[in-house]
Length: 489
Ligand SMILES: *Cc1c(COP(=O)(O)O)cnc(C)c1O
Image 1 (cartoon, rainbow, N blue to C red):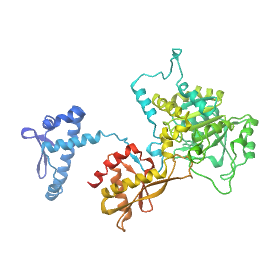
Image 2 (image 1 turned 30 degrees about the vertical axis):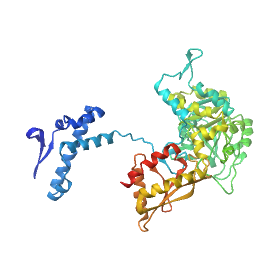
Image 3 (image 1 turned 90 degrees about the vertical axis):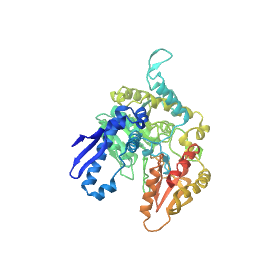
Image 4 (image 1 turned 90 degrees about the horizontal axis):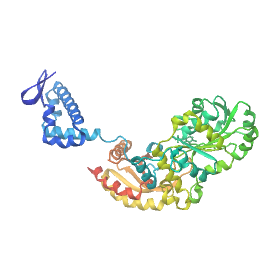
């Protein structure tokens, strides 16, 4: 229970006596509050002030009821300037976006939890324009008639993949769902047992198949599937044969899988379309940049696939989206499915995707221009030089409780691309100086790095924190250095 007391102060009655806090209107009318009201608005500032006072009141009561000593220990400064400072901190805090930029020093370039591909500046600029201007999203400028948003990038996709037609949806999971629902509703889809993948928990081929209304027909064994397994399963009930890229694992040892060049003639013999979920959509041969080979979309189309699905934000290096390319008649059916409307992409995605695809017309310049490829092809020597610059700065910021060294390490491409291949990299390794409670010291360190304005995310392994510098881009290094001062404080 609270009652107004002398001159606006509020007294809360409780067993041991009154607790005094200024009335909310005295805080809001104070000159010190003007800048907060200007920034956050009167309504929000008033609500935050009320919430702050309610919390303080509860705290003071609890402390007093816990005894005089506790009350004294916990007593906050309840003068108006101090309350306004608390109010400012509270408002700043609640207005900080929960989605924030971070430093990805995990060594995984396409990190799904950290947003996958970073986009090149040309795509960034296109998105800015698309947010500020009306766009001919579904408007044919040549004819002045209604258009189709897929047309904006279809031609470019056909040029880059050799396919007959293309369509875009929200992500590759949506692409697979839409494809199955269109081509195989209430019919069977033949998939090898060795390819029934789960990608990041929620996306499992058997589950997507069920949700799409298709019937999974598993063939072969986990480690070995033969052409005759597909042949024997095919029949009038079959709508599709499907191959799925085993993105995040490798089956080694006594194995056999049926490659596209064998499966394609069989699918043709049965007159059944053949689909490939490629996962990471690679549009160029990565070997020319010194990276391991990953089957390209063009190779898959040329190998006889009738439909190919892949992600926009994995190796392709673009925005989140799912791309389906393939036979004209099948793509036309897919585009007519009402689910396409529910899964379609927005203008910001299309705005970002077009300039990224356009970069592929100059494959020789791609490692300079496409951010993802630039990061994947950074020479280890460059990261080593960077590590040597940063080492003394990080060591000074962390103090004597930690030892920082620069060491060779390996990065991963991530997002299920080339799961077994590792890229030679270089970075900083931080070890707690004292033996003993190492895991505790590492936990504290990780937390301090995460608490920075631009959280630094590394990887804990072998009693050390590993900071792979592959993804610390030159133009972002200064920001990294500047905030090291906050570690010392
Ligand atoms: C990544 C992946 C998907 C899911 O793609 P999203 O774009 O994340 O929806 C589906 N299939 C395979 C084989 C993949 O690697």
